[in-house]
Length: 143
Image (tube, one colour):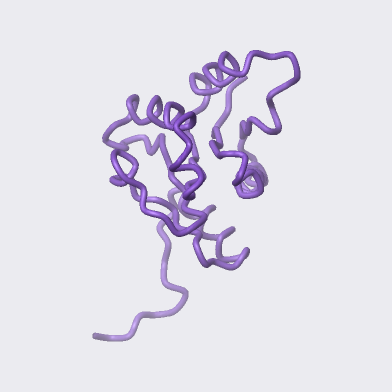
């Protein structure tokens, strides 16, 4: 199966992972989220490997819990390696809690949802993932 997006999150952030996946799917995109798509009896590592190969882009739900989990680092490292300059925007971090990514993840501009209302987060996520240029809601003041 071909996925437009693979959403990577840790168990502590499953609520965010499901919200992000739902919002992306609501825009007619195919999304793989392990909590939704891993079936009993399947090999977790093989399933993840297959999902990484068959997904166009990866959304990483970034929080202190995500950054502390060594197991998920391999997921986004594989995607980063295939697009280290970010030309295809293959790896998209989404900040859902105050934290400071370090290393390679630090240099990728995230979608920052921290402190946003649900509506603000929905709009920001859609605009940033679809690549539309965000515009101020009103005319800026003349400097």
